[in-house]
Image (cartoon, rainbow, N blue to C red; front, side, top):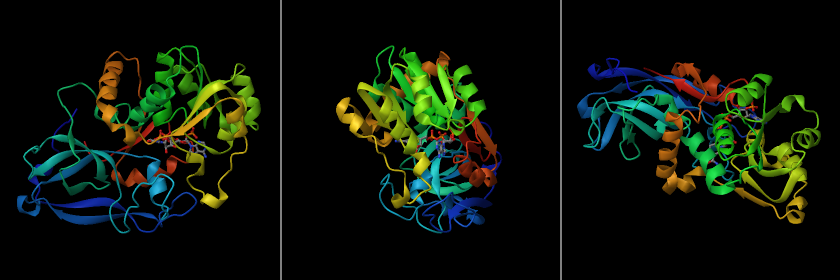
Length: 357
Ligand code: NAP
């Protein structure tokens, strides 16, 4: 739910901290040479806001892997637009309207914006804003996790594309993260046997204890994925939701059942590597012998089904059939560290930065 306006509405000029892209990062984990923090002065006077624009104070910003693929300075991969240099980067954010020159939005409205500048304050077109109903008891971070992109991606992967039958053997990588935690819970609700891989023993415990996974393993501790997959899937894999790509995907291909489905959401293990040096997949021939279907997708291609998803997910949240787990870091300063944490197995759950309350 919303909260107070923090006094922002009373201010006419603010010093706003923002993260901007100083240089593209073609390979390796981005550093402070690429993403930098600066302070800019913004007038929030009514006359400073252009027609059909609103001034927004950022409350929460989602920290997502797709940002990594957009700042390589290369085209291709996810085919998302390349952010311009020297401008504030953007992400899925929740903010409070502090000035409005659009009839659909009033001061005090809480809004979600897929192109939210990672900035304490911004003046933006109202086109992509959606109001969040503040009369429900759904906590705001949920709109960036189970009711946002990670939850929707998990739903598309499991319900729309994978659609496993009860009793199917389902494998999910990056199982404790935003997409993985909801995918695992959705597959369990469909009566599947679900195994996840993730990057720490605490996360293995989390997916089993809180998300209902039947089994899990720490991929950092497995020297041979073939051996691990044989152990956890004695009856083979019917559906693999791939969030990581690389060697794990290659080894999954040796354990698929006839008619198996591989749904590729992303390949985070390859995001810091230039295309020529990425791990190749050698076991594709299994797809022929086992009639396997492999399919990549972007959740944005399924937006026409978002309403159906949101209705179901809200019901599951109220019934506590789906449990979210958030890693909420405090202050806009923590955005860079939060982003880099996506590549080190150091977080737990969906990573979000709380910028203001
Ligand atoms: P997330 O899982 O919350 O965070 C990323 C996680 O990936 C990290 O916490 C880390 O967890 C794992 N990871 C990082 N480097 C790795 C490596 N080298 N090998 C294996 N695992 C590694 O992020 P998310 O937002 O839910 O995204 C998960 C995947 O879905 C990403 O590939 C992302 O690009 C994709 N995605 C796709 C769509 C779509 O529309 N297709 C939408 C959203 C996200 P561990 O502790 O397990 O290592």
